[in-house]
Length: 426
Image (tube, rainbow, N blue to C red):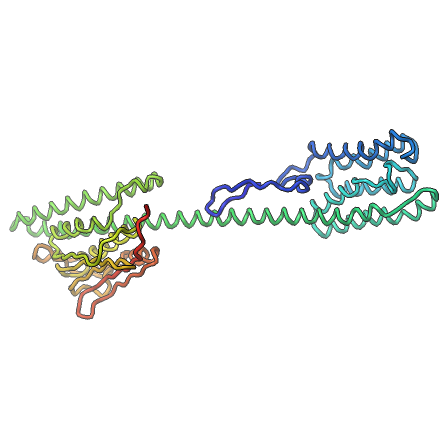
């Protein structure tokens, strides 16, 4: 039997005990194999053979001894396919031997393992209640005929050895059946949990890629939309400003294409994720410079002692700042914003604020954008709530952090993300 670990990988093979292998491994076909033939032959040779060779050890003619000995052993060949029928056949042979006075083994009441093996197989292959009924019926049958056998053959000893042998055989067989059922249920549960964990991992990966695509596309398209509107309005009167706006559009487009190519490489080859350069805190100044060139009055500062962070923390910090600044461009209705990165002893704090009169929800509603000191084009019709703030909160929550996004008391909007300061893994 092979188990599956919680992470979905196959675990170490577990070898069933010898008594479990005698009944057949889980899933083993219920047909005779070399073990069944060996058991049947062994019972005949080891217990009936001496009675045939030594006349003093048998009672009855050699033909009767050989016949009943073979009939008591032969059913064991098909014990796994027809366990109840096998037990019934063996019990009938012992009853017939008692009534006819034939001793086909050297022991009293034809003591041997045949009856115990049949009881064991019934307890292992059948349910507890039917196997118990079959075992009791067969054992009582061999015991009930004892007085009749003693009356018919008064000089021959008889005892209830078959009934006594059937009790421990049934207990062992039922234990093996229960243990095998437990092992099978445990294996199924481990597989189910492994499949659930794999499904959750895939869902989380899809969600992560969805957030990344949203952040990249939303930020870049917002910049392109704002700057293209500026270029259209200033093309005739201020061609220099229009050219600067077109240059900003080109830069934003190339940056978006590069990041989308990285995401597509991750989708095609997840194993190469570690080799793909993802945005980090070191890329924030470049993001700020691009937005400054597009006309946003943006200030940037860092406080505290700079320290290394895990790749997940740095990526989430960059994406949160990127999405918050995208919302400033789209909805704040201002040309001034501030970005602060605070390196604390136990957490990394990203704060993005603006002083615009934008809507109460930074990810909802229209708002004019300003660039290059000129009125920007009005935003389209009011739109439904987007995924920006939801995605930022999810990013923070996945790392054990928290994010607040709410209007400031004095006007404007503030996004504050607090992420645990997890050290970069070496």
